[in-house]
Image 1: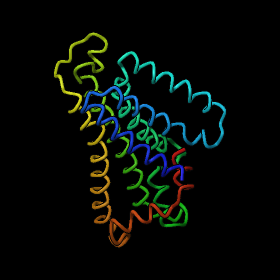
Image 2: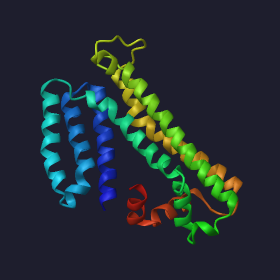
Image 3: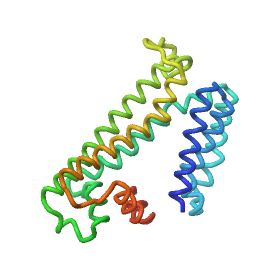
Image 4: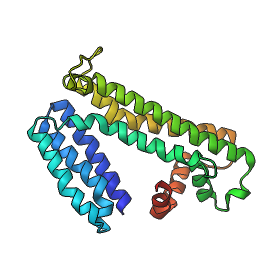
Length: 227
């Protein structure tokens, strides 16, 4: 339930952030910041964590202060960078010695059994795929940071008094950072599935069936996996 709520909030944030960029609207930017705060804090708030209840009014006050100062849109430039870096870290941290690669854990969860029963070539593939995801996401984060720096007016460079060498509009930034990111991730997912199906025939009947298996793992599996 919490994961679904966070997903809906993430979609609402993307829509509001894009509208803030299209319309140059500080009001939409403030709304986007509010949704972002809710998305980050909803789980600890529902768990009645004291620190979350302290953080909520402080974060709301910070967002309001930025709005009053005319800088509500500035944090939006960094959100795609931080978001993608966080996902990259989820993948990369499982590649440390003694850890089980993220894709390996998902594959074992789908197919049952244990990692000891997985064929060596499949173990190598899932480890390589985990690394590929981490590197692809790091590349996306770097691209998002570059776009945030080039945005004009009042992008990251211009906010510290430096001219953007190749100015791009906020609308162009938003199409890439708030929307294209999801397309790139979805495209990578589809291409990798096609490669996996060709390399390991007979394991998955269709992409829709594979997605159903992923969803069938349940929220507890995904929550524990992402921690």
